[in-house]
Image (cartoon, rainbow, N blue to C red; front, side, top):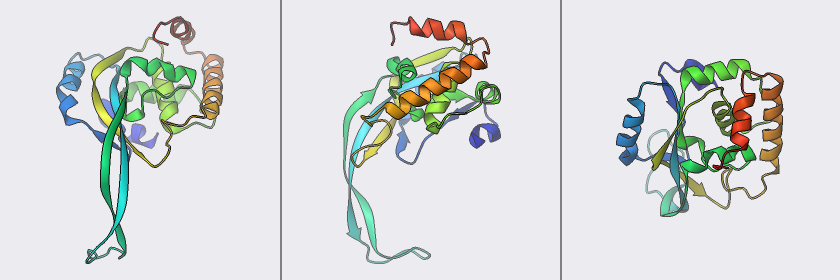
Length: 197
């Protein structure tokens, strides 16, 4: 949230330490930004399964602790999160990671000021919910992989099989939105009837 408050740009893009950007998607992203109207931009994201191995270093750099260093052993692309499935996040299914979305700063500041976060949310999930339930929001779906998510180990938040925590967060969030109605209700009903679910 602090990054959104401090941003001095029109858009903000969150890339976590296990994500990386796909430079080849730049032209498609640039075309979507030329339109000039603030919108939530959603692109697909690849899922990369990584394995790492420890290697001994001959010497440590100045100021670094000694000992083994991790080296990437393999990186295998396994699947893709489709931008077309982004609205499934409203069913507790995290089909698009936060690195697959670019959010308009002004819209997000307005949403943060109007919707109180009473639930125990994963921050990424909360930001997506805030953006997608904004009144009269325009969502631009890009048919390209803007970023990739590195899966390191057995599981992370986008691959969790037990979604009960996400469902509880979703129910709490929707109650908050309805109790603090900002013109959202028609949009939520429209989503409920959407074939994209």
